[in-house]
Amino acid sequence: MKKICLMLAMLLLACCVFGACNGNGGSEEGTKAPTEGPAPQTDAPAPVETGYDGSAVTIRFYHTMGQNLREVLTTYIAEFNKLYPNITVEEDQVGGYNDVRDQVKTEITTGNQPNIAYCYPDHVALYNKAKAVQTLDELIASTAEVTRADGTTEIMGLTEEQKADYIEGYYAEGTAFGDGLMYTMPFSKSTEVLYYNKTFFEKNNLQVPTTWDELYEVCKKIKEIDPKSVPLGYDSESNWFITMCEQYGSPYTSATGDHYLFNNEQNVKFLEEFNKWYQEDLVTTQGLYGTYTSGLFVSTDERKSYISIGSSAGATHQRPTAVDGVFPFDVGIAPIPQVDPANPKAISQGPSVCIFKKANEQEVYASWLLIKYLTTSVEFQADFSKASGYIPVIKSVENDEIFKKSMEEADGGAGIAALSIKVGMEMKDMYFVSPAFVGSSVARDQVGEVVKKALNMKGGNIAAQIESALQDAVDECEYQE
Image (cartoon, rainbow, N blue to C red):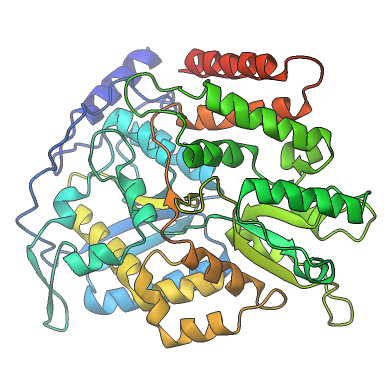
């Protein structure tokens, strides 16, 4: 009986169209999504012709922000309310990212999903099994005029200048779903950067590597200088694999057709190369080390690293503890190494936001106006970045005087978070996103497991062992679909 109720609830929700959802019914079995998703499209929906009409509406925003970020958010919601006093914003901190996903997934079955939520691409693909996510193309393209409380007006959509201001790689994530449509807007973004012990590098006349070949040679030199060290720690095995695919131009996944393409000759080759690095004790990863490799980077023990590749948003974890107000060493930050420096690639990380369909179209319009306000506001982006360590999603923040001053004061000690943001902004033309579909998170987990296995492989014919492990990962992905 529960399954029948679930099917009826999903059928009802899947029949929702913009402005025509019912939102009643559901069952306790609602954590499972239906199996039918939106048909692939290439033409964007027509722009909405009407805009927010000043109606009193309440919109709910699910996120994972801590207290310091919530303070920034609520400050700017108050500013937004000066423009739109009839829009009440209820912002809710819902645990971690997976907690947001699970709560939204459950609420979708009853039509009680929030208006806005932090999301990752695979979350959106899951929600879209019920066609619950509002496409944004028609809102972005809208020229409908909206009147603010002070009598001034704005258009519902984005101007060409506003669209061009978004960092391209972050903005492009919204269209990573295989149908050519826009589902998300960037919000709390980061990337991977290379942290290095600047004091050690300068003392030993080491050059910061810009390619993987250079990194290998630097690691060998470090090992000669300090034989007890493991020169490089890489936090995310999954990111490492996906980034190498992008830099080599080798297949990883596809949002349409055959999803799992990562068992190929090029990917076997780079894993075989990194196996050599591990066997020479030049590198470790979070999974092999047992915890974040930043701990190895800031270690005062004999066993330590001098290079760490990790999230730009985690810069303060890559800084050693000060002793009597003095840091044991200075930290440098640089872009990650490249296969081809002329065509650099770095992964786009961190949550975006999506808007959910609602029976009341004014809720959708109000949700869009809030997200538009927060993601195009130089002041909000600057303050949010400084409070969080996230990279601003718009380029014009670099012209903000207060933001520029914080970047000028950035260093590898007390100003390490600002230094990380500065490097992240310098990398803004490098960012890429992977295809998103139900199962893309499984693929990510599986290739991370393959990296751990591949680095640890011994004996003859490592390439054949890696190929077998990759095929097992493909099979596991297909099994879990």
